[in-house]
Image (tube, rainbow, N blue to C red; front, side):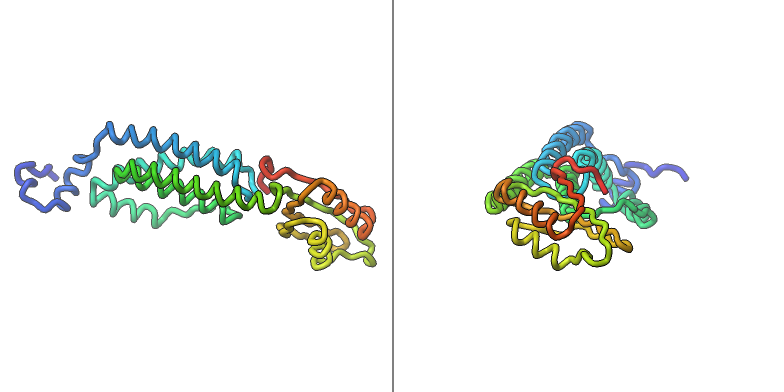
Length: 240
């Protein structure tokens, strides 16, 4: 098929022109600028995620994906916005793509959507709006997280217990919740496994001082002799 004459294409509608000249409106300098800005914003979002997030995952490794996600979306939007044909082709391509990455926490999804939203704005040329929205969002979330931390008195920590019972001292969820409620300011059951006579559970807890943690350990040991306990600081936990 012979290429269409540009003089003839000038009289065609803009949508038809885009199909024959898809890269006419893509400027290299603004694209490179938005990629650099997007990389810096993704690093800021990653640092915010590592410090403030409470999801049960390896935040260090997960946040390293943010720059790649940000740059990819910026590139896609920058190219697609200049061509109706490419936009339709992208829809067709995405219809056959399946993403199998398991996302265990809603908080992880929210940070991914924040990266995508900022990237879409940068790819569409709304650089000022993207920077303003990113900074404002992170400041507001930081304020909420900081207020929540002050309310509980301390950042959360994960406590895991493992108990091999003999049938008489069987572990129940309601009793565990009662013990944790008495000695902590916050307790959330994150994991519970019960197989024959073996029970394993993980709680996300907050406490006002170390004496409360000592009291919790003593209460668990009195109720479940031989119980194994371990503490995990939430900011350096590997994915499970």
